Image (cartoon, rainbow, N blue to C red; front, side, top):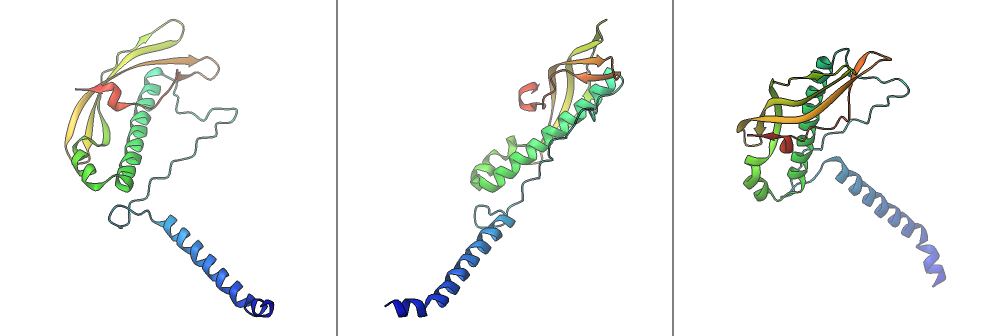
Length: 182
């Protein structure tokens, strides 16, 4: 029996190697294009940009006036909300039962665009600007419908005396579904 085992050893090794190679190829091909319900190819999720490495000196979008910093921050907050919605839609497309997605499509936000900023700022003698931010956005839903909503969120911005830039205190992504109403 040991002679038979030895005689088939190289052939058996070759078959095992081919089986392993085929398995790796199947795994790698599955990573290339996501599958969706029904066996079709799905849309790849967007690649999230790696966090900015700010090092010892901030590479900032803060500006030399509180209003300019607010304008940049509001624009970036809306862009982050849109990126979040892209990711959510990608997950729905890849993992949710299509009939459920179709049923809920009117409530799935696709994009959020600024319509008008009505924010009135209070500036203190301590170089702090604060406001109950008040702005209108147009939400476009996955079914193409649109709706204009008013958003309110507390914001504080302070002047850094060292570099003369105004920085947002406690910046956070804009939670449009929480702070924007009809």
